[in-house]
Image (tube, rainbow, N blue to C red; front, side, top):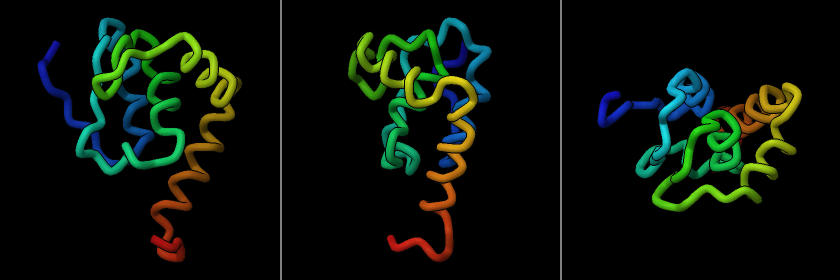
Length: 93
């Protein structure tokens, strides 16, 4: 596995990393998506093998919260709403 993988600033790009079953450590440091609301939960939900995210251990409580928030396809709607809010030309930044 490569030492470094570039992920664009769009949170949906994280879903492309799902096939990496051995991915245990991931960092969003310096990436604009790190400041998005619920981004940590989304990454934990999508990357099930993670043990460490942004230098912090992923807890079972975080996994449960992520599962509750994004289970049953709700994540696509939430992600769409988050990205529309953040990237909309009408959003207040």
